[in-house]
Figure 1 (cartoon, rainbow, N blue to C red):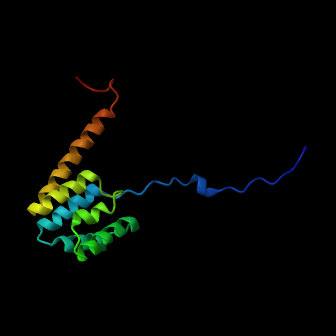
Figure 2 (figure 1 turned 180 degrees about the vertical axis):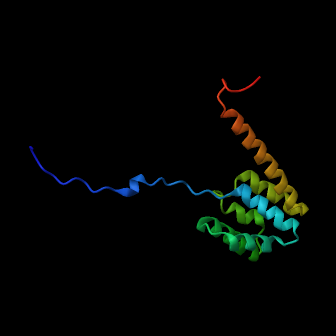
Figure 3 (figure 1 turned 90 degrees about the vertical axis):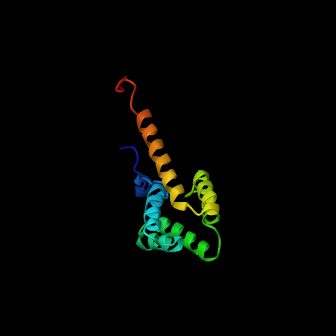
Length: 133
């Protein structure tokens, strides 16, 4: 043995995989649509979603929306404050329906768009050798 030195302590934090927490937009749209169609108001619907939510960042997002709505801001303006959760296309769709009052229709269109996008992504991830005609 030529020398002795203490080994560095293991830093277990290096082995934790930190996934970026994402707001579940499609789930939010589905649940909000269901609550609105059941007859709840927009504020009641988002409050109900916030109350049942156990994931901290998602709950904070929903509580932000509720607070902003109670202060008289529109839903699109409240969502615009949170670009990490609400993409520009989604916010624009909501803003357009604020004039017509048909938020459920916008949510349905977004969910249809998201399903088509997921299908395209799924198809493009299949290797060419596996694809059929």
